[in-house]
Length: 195
Image (cartoon, rainbow, N blue to C red; front, side):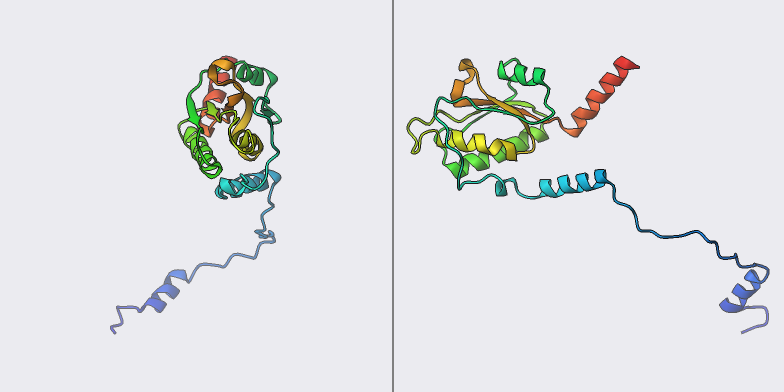
């Protein structure tokens, strides 16, 4: 090696010769982050969404209802006016699922797929025709299970038996939750009106 050429270590020492080290600061670098309630709620929602919905929609046991009984379901937070408008059939029906002649397992699988597809397509108001089940054993089998499943489907905000022209007590109106994109769109529309 020539005198003109410095090896890597000597070059480093030469370059750093006039550098003085910084004094140690007294800042606490504790990187333990505090988890907020909002973060826990988001995490719980993500875990719940990742679990198969069929795990929550039982095929084992459901409270049996009569073929002509009304089905009424509303989650907390749904406005009374929205629920009334759904109950009266005032929203346009955007999609329809018919469960006639389906086994209970096929009906459950179809309901799960139908709701998922509607959410992907930003469809909110749907009708599920379950029939009255006069000829099933026990009567109103699919209707009873569908009524029991509603509270376990997070996307369903409210439901009510349909008007006679849409199937009466043999069908069900469902209002699905807004997608995140639709929520943002609504926020922006309200901001324009207020701003």
